[in-house]
Amino acid sequence: MLITCPYCGPRDVIEFTYQGDGNRERPQPASQDLDAWNAYVYNRLNPAGDHNEIWQHSGGCRAHLRVVRNTLTHEISSVAFARGDHKSVARHKTEGKS
Amino acid sequence: MAEYSAFSLLKNALTGNKDWKPAWRKPDPKASYDVIVIGGGGHGLSTAYYLAKEHGITNVAVLEKGWLGSGNVGRNTTAVRSNYLLPANTRFYEHSMKLWENLSHDLNYNVMFSQRGCLNLAHTPAQLDDFARRGNAMRHLGVDAELMTTAEIARLVPALDVSATARFPIVGGLMQRRAGTARHDAVAWGYARGADRRGVDIIENCEVTGFLRDGDRISGVTTSRGEIRARKVAVAVAGSTGQVMRLAGIDTMPIESHVLQAFVTESLKPFINTVLTFGMGHFYMSQSDKGGLVYGGDLDGYNSYAQRGSLPVVDEVMSEMLALFPGLARVRMLRSWGGVCDMSMDGSPIITIGPLPGMYLNCGWCYGGFKATPASGWCFAWTIAKDEPHDISAPFTLDRFHRGLVIDDKGQGPTPRLH
Image (cartoon, rainbow over all chains, first blue to last red; front, side, top):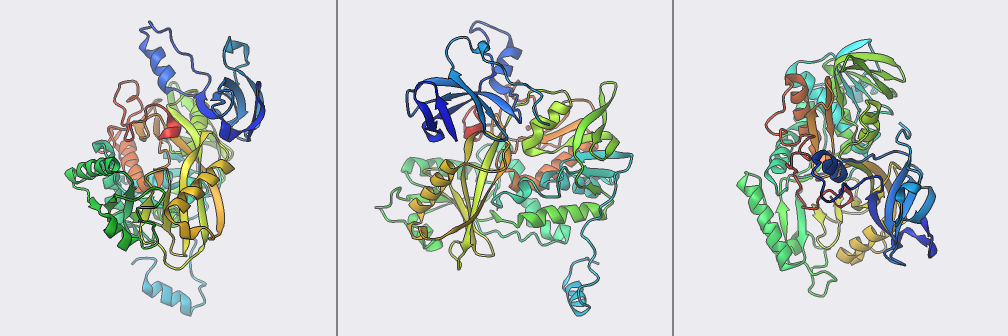
């Protein structure tokens, strides 16, 4: 699998570290909403289809990347820097293939 | 009289093998059942078997999307062990071990359970201390465990590089003698036949496409072969848990699906007579009765529903094998494959009533589900039949994450790819 780093170009997956589901929203640090914290820590969409996820180019420029990858085919449809307003990247559809 | 016996083998051999019956029927689904089990893998089939055998509930359907045993029950590396650290896990897997020890007799089906032991290698004194702690925890609960010295290990596994100049010198190991391997296909077929003979309908090529509701209550399923109603619907679908729960309107679960690869080499003469695990990486190996070395390593490391793996992990697993056995460098790998694992947030399973009324859930087996097959079905059947958890499976609730009662044997935290 190749991931096209916006800074370094196409690189082999072994240069990257998977950092998991990119859909989770961390509550504000002062939040005492236990349900929101629990959901953030433990709940996953886990779609069979396009998945919005975070990778770090740990063997390259070390940038954190927001990748949309299909979990059935491993096809990557978008890669962007994770910094900034992540909501500008389309969130994946939750319906997926069932 | 037992259907399979020396006598029946001889009789059929002499009559041209014309009288063998199919091991299970191929019934069409009825309009309704007392219990529907979604998933015709090891856990679904053993659930149906123990529902019929232990609780007299025989009006049961097992719905399987593909063919029986096409998922993880036929994709694992067949190891059976109960060498866990935490009491909830130790008790559960030891219950499974005890069922394994009598399984061929119970099913009248030879599952080739072979208690050849499982040896975890330690490569540093600190690691050996940690193994001693786990061994003591096991023995405290009545499970067998013993520490082995390097000399004893060299006698048990002569091919192992136990020299001080090895890349990762071996300083000892933790052995569970009662651990071993079983033939995984036979486990699926044996449970299927046992359930079928007690009246359970095993319905293959029947994909669940949705759930029927009666008010809030789940009252059946829609499938590729029509609607089927049931008072109780049990879900045992491993890597597809998220997808099936989504059909019931539950979008998030404490589960990620990851692919785990397994490998087998060409047949060799007897080479290793135990299940061996490497302590400086993630690698485990045993030898099948056909002679192939069966082995595997880590998950690919990112969410996947593809039942195939990627090459970097192949490379890593092979290099770990050669670190232990330099002599295997020229042995050819025959096959590799992948299975989709339902990785939970603490590395432990979920066997529970709910989360919706009328529904029962069995999932989160990570990549250790094969050894759990008998106890998983046994406890799940109890839960379904009595509408309360058995003491052994009571800790494995779905809400334990939110209640702070996680069972994290490896202490990895909520990072499923690391369990």
